[in-house]
Image 1 (tube, helix red, strand yellow):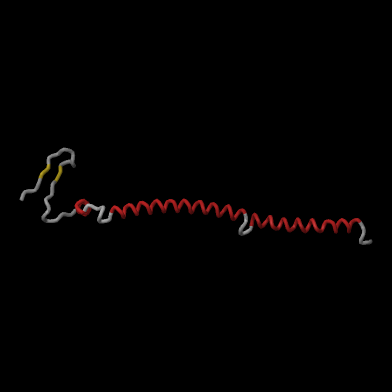
Image 2 (image 1 turned 135 degrees about the vertical axis):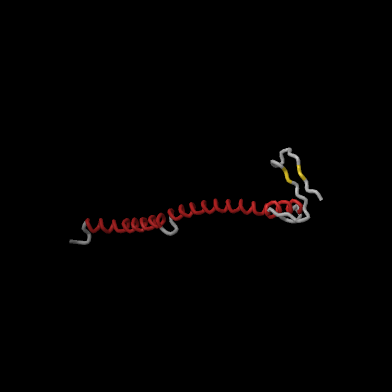
Length: 116
């Protein structure tokens, strides 16, 4: 058999396209499945969206806390109101305080005051 037979000629002509196809298949596979492929990119985009939601929630919580802190500063806080709220929440009173009891809440009832 000579090297000029049609089978060998066809094989020589097919080697370059087979190698090119193999290289293309390799790069296409890794562009989809690789560490930096399309599937990894889509997964990363999902994670970015989730993290953005968490960031927005955290930003809202931070803004609320900042507003709360600003309202607790001495310039904005009424000391009498603070004292009243603290005593009401702690259910405590100073011995010199005059306590006024309301019957049935504040709904137009008469008040009873302590006498000196």
